[in-house]
Each structure stands twice: as C-alpha cells, then as structure tokens.
Length: 371
Ligand code: SAH
Image (cartoon, rainbow, N blue to C red; front, side):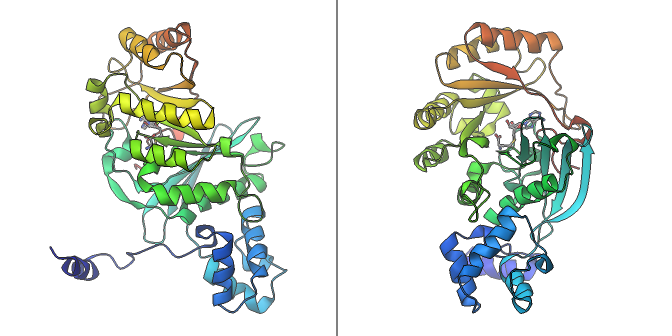
C-alpha cells in the first residue's frame, strides 16, 4: 500500500488520540528548553527555574512556582509541563514499601511503574513501552504485544512521580533514606527496542540539577532480551549504566523458545556483546535468569550456565518465576532453586536469588498492567 494511502487510512479509521505525546520539558536538553521558552516569548533563564521546579522539587502545579510571574505560570506550564501520566490506580504491599501505579497516557495506553523502598535505597522500576513486542511466553507483558513506544518524558515522568511520592513520605521504610536513588528499566517493554527515547531518559536521569535528576549512572539498570546492535550502540554512548541481560537459558535450543529473539541473536552473540559492554564500564553485567520448574532449572543447565559465565565480570540474578495466569509454567522447587544457586557459586560465578517484591499485588516481573 502506498504511504499516502496508509496515512489516509490512519486518519480515517484510527482512534482520534493517535500521534505523539505532547512535548514536555523532560524531552528537551537545556538548550532546547531555552529555545522553547524563547519561542513563546519568555526569557531563557526561565528554563532553569522550570527545570529546578520539575527535577528538584518535583512540582507540576504552577501555583507553587512562586518565582514565576503569575501571568506566565499557566502559559509556561501549558507549553512545557503538560500532564503526561494520569494515575488510574495505586496498590501497595510490603507495609507500604512497594507501590505499584497504573498510569493512563495521553492516548489511553496503559503502563505501570513500581516503587520499592529498602533500608539503603529506593528503586523505581519503569516501563519503556506500552506492551512489548518480544513475545517471551512466560512474561505477561509479552503476551499482549506492543501498543507503542513511550516518549522520553513519559519515561522520566514515571521516575519523577516516584521521587515525588518519596519526598511526600509515601514510603514508610524510606523515611530517613529520603531520596529515590535507583532506576531499573524492568517494567513493561524492551528498552533497547525504544532506543532513542530510553537513552534520552537516561540522560535526563543522570544530568545534575537543575538539568536533570542527578542520579548516579551506575544506579541505573537497562535490562534487555539481548538486541546485540543496540547493546553495542549503548556501549558507544559510554554511559556507566548497569546492563542486565535476560538470559533464562544457557543453550540456544531452549532459549529460542523462552526468548524468541534468540533466533536472531543467539546466546553466544548476546554474551559477547555483554562482555564488550563490561569492558567499557569495568563493572559486572547482571544476568537475569527466571527459574521455571522443569524447564530451565536442571542441574545440567546450571553447569552449562556456570561454564558460559565463569571468569567474566558478571552477577547472576535468579528470579523465581511469577506464574502468569493461564500458563502451565510455575516456579521451581525450593531444592532445585538452591541447587542452581550453589552450582553457580561453586563454579566461582557470583549469584543471588532475587527477592520478589510485590507478589501479592501482581507487581512482580512481567505482570505489569496485564489485568
Ligand atoms: N524487556 C526487558 C525488560 C523487561 S522485564 C527484558 O526482557 O530484560 C524485566 C525482567 O523480568 C526480565 O528479565 C524478564 O525476563 C523478567 N520476567 C518477565 N516475566 C517474568 C515472570 N513471569 N517471572 C519472572 N521474571 C519475569
């Protein structure tokens, strides 16, 4: 079909709120922010004020921005701080220290984020896409397919909403720790399939105040199924972020079924890209491995995984599978989990069992927004 015809079809048949999310301060770098303000006739120093309100004070209410002339407030906010996320529902567990929020985006698409308070850190798990196109059969998000990519600001705004909740004292366990410190791209979506927006978001997260949130680069984790060219591209950005690779199987035969994109970039190529990344950061690659009963938790697979990883800068996170409704797969037996962990450790591969926050609110991996 010719391009113009497809465009016409979209115009005629698709929902009215199609198109790009509104432009937001967090989409722009500092120079672009100044230009955006100049274009609505405001002095460029307002850009810093606005950035400080948003990234340091987490404000989105113009009436609290008392250093802006009253006449300008609404104008500036309408131009650069449109509301991107509307909370549909928030659920909490772990005595309030895990908070899952379902957000509606401007076009009705739904995503979720999960805020987790620990004694020494506060972690926000963000979505990078509405849905996901990777089709991993054990993952609830993978079942629904991809709706769309999120914009940079739609990703950043999830983190700012989390920072605002922490600042308000919404996480009882984090009163004292105080600040949101870590971000993991482990919500809905494959971050490296939405490369430009995700890298843009990381840049806003790590930019020092007033330009961004000022988070430590190594406190940001980008998790991927293993899109090799995008891992290499991310390496070339030379940001000291943590790379997590969702491996889930040491052999191509099984991984082809658990992570279908493996047929394009097999285990060996993914790990080579991961080691190249580790050579740049000089820090450990996180290997994610969801243990699925009698599927990938056998002793031989633990040994095969150990053999692949031994001697590399790596840490294995074993995750008890969160069964998704309707799937015949379930978590491993406790004994098999222990054996898997011990086999890795005995081979000199650092490994831990991930603590699974938010199980009872279906905020665990891969269950976001499924219902
Ligand atoms: N697309 C990215 C990030 C999103 S998911 C990725 O695949 O890495 C974050 C992690 O949760 C991934 O390791 C994913 O494989 C894992 N996961 C998904 N569904 C899960 C489930 N039902 N139980 C346990 N882990 C799951």
